[in-house]
Image 1 (cartoon, one colour):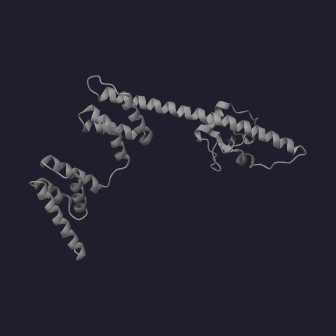
Image 2 (image 1 turned 90 degrees about the vertical axis):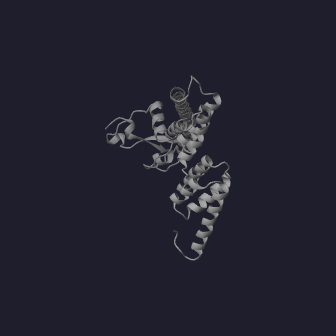
Image 3 (image 1 turned 45 degrees about the vertical axis):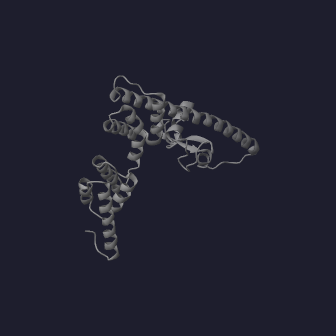
Length: 258
């Protein structure tokens, strides 16, 4: 029969950390319950203390696997168990804080690396990120994660020539990468950009409302042609409103969109 060896505090911590301080049998977490390390393959049956044979279990799940014999000194044993659980709970709280500290270090290192990428690959003339800029990247990283922020950095600096503008837009671009707008919304903003580029005056909010309404009824290319040919804002607005009225009549009369 294999002899059971005590598990080191370091090994138990690694098992707890791997399992997110969660009992793998019932799902309860520390510090709500006292956690223990259980052998998947019992030592009595040849199981080892390798981390791959270890799993996180709460006190109740782990001790509930075998029948317990109540002896004459049950009260003393109960008190000893309660003391043992109290000490284990205190130790696990310390482990949780240590784990959180390790995660914070990982996050800080990731933010530092992101800043280095911006400074070495995108900023011009030896510019450096300010503390405000660093905090902005840290906020973006916490909300959206490493991959999305990397994509947002690349997109922003490719889209905007001004370094300060590009830096400020990173967190906004990260938001839209994670929460992409519906296709018709993206199209409406692109078409409004065409109007802004061509016309002296554009009512921004009205343009978006007209474009999004018409995109629900008419072909994108037809609306794009209107944006490219309208001589001024009044002409675009008047024609757009006619299209909306025609679409409403089609719906009322049960006709299909043209």
